[in-house]
Image (tube, rainbow, N blue to C red):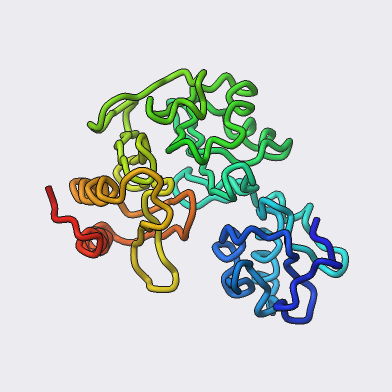
Length: 290
């Protein structure tokens, strides 16, 4: 829980605040952008919630903050709001919440599917999520986009008997993974789920396309709420920016409506506008389609 004695001076007066343990991971700004914004090296409360719905979103941010850096000055309804998670987005796809500090606050997602449920990257391993995942039918597969966001996937795998999926070039982060991928060609593991290797951010980074609609992008690309565009970052590219540009251009061969990243804002658009946005990103990265 946040410490009032460490409350940042940039917070506006009122119930919610951020303290100096914040790692500026963006989780709170994704969940309640009307309350939280970036201020230097931290997130901060720039406007207190004014409606019940805004307060609920701010409370979701408090719960999901990986470092427990968000607090309230009085009693809150955190236990009630906890029931919102995993948070349903659309068609059996959920945002898990409870982002883990082990992945620097990376987002994790859950897909409920008749042939077996999927967890994409890993949230914190907490009793509430374990119980909720069990209620939704357990976890058959855990897809790990890359080494940075494995967090506590081994604990979820042990709890549910899940098969972890990771590319061989990322295997050091999960050496006992049950399914190891190779190469750079798309891999259809089971119907409706296509793994697309996207080297760049890391050498073995992969994205997952579900039902030609939901693209789980890890740290490959995301929606930038400031510019209103799809974005990628050379600053946070650990392997090869040139390879990442090529990998982004390959996604032009696929159709999807959702971008669900590990870090950064998620977004939904119709396929044609999404494709145009992707083409603009490819152009901005200086990479022509191959």
